Length: 96
Image (cartoon, rainbow, N blue to C red):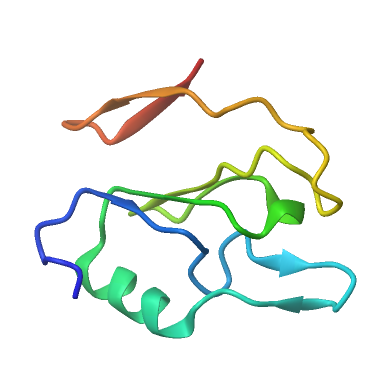
């Protein structure tokens, strides 16, 4: 139930195939249905966490994906909070 005109999508867990890899089980565990919807509506930014081992950023040409998990797989504080500026006209991100 994500609105068609969504620019920024904040969700708990990742969409399938985007920063959702879990090394100990050697699989991508993100939500396939969410990924289908994201491909349909093409939000500019999707921010999530939950899969602590896959902290990071990827861009697929349409959407910026940010796994902002601050804890590692053992629940130890490892990553600084993600801070960025977004230009909605150019869809460029500048990480601070």
